[in-house]
Length: 317
Image (tube, rainbow, N blue to C red; front, side):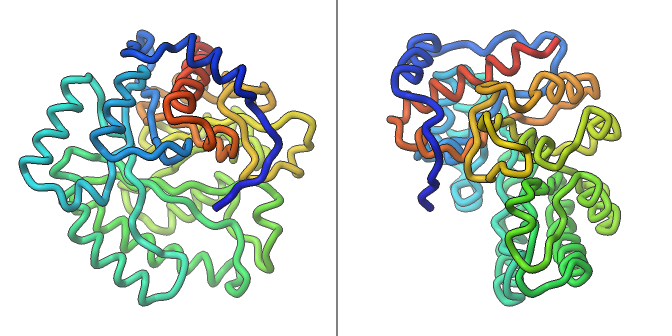
């Protein structure tokens, strides 16, 4: 999908970032007292890569974890799986969170088909030593009222969580915070941490938690105090982003974000330090939905993302 937005990073800045990070193997900064990993999800920054190439990119640019490709791992032969796990170990990388390959937002038939496929994919992910899976919740609906939508999410996501739990997989749910998103359709739906925690409580399974995004934390008007209500167990994965300057929070648009620590609009220092103080061990990935970044050559986009992530992680005390 084409994403329209103002230019956030000109080519000169990208070249400087690439020069700073280098094009060869760059070791990740020492972790110190943190357990969170600097994570690479190629698709989220517009870089095309298969599983082997993603691992190579993560190692080259100093990331510490890498997104598992569900489609590849679900069909991989034992030889292919051994090769990939060997590469992962050799580069001192770990898996982050896989995406959920189930359409639970639409028609019942599609959901049932996806759930059936998940019964095959979940054990394959576990065999590949993946431990986390995540998805997002649409913040509005044209036809379902809040209560009807809540019940559908509770019932369907409970079934998903049960399948994942049978393979020892944790399941994270991400809320979408911008007012421009939840007010865009007839019936607003879950768009805050508190509401997502209510949904998780209704699902009632131990393996369900949150996918936290600094962007949604900011646009939902949440604070350090909201983060302090959580424990490490509650956080399955983390997205880290900044927001364009010059806009009120209720004017922010979900598809127009910045790389972490690019503008200072979002207090990523407080966000990361609070989660770190909780002992959070989740993978942390950039998800800027940025058209300019997506148009860059792969190595420039990777270098810019790596530099931004390390700049943000340097704020951890």
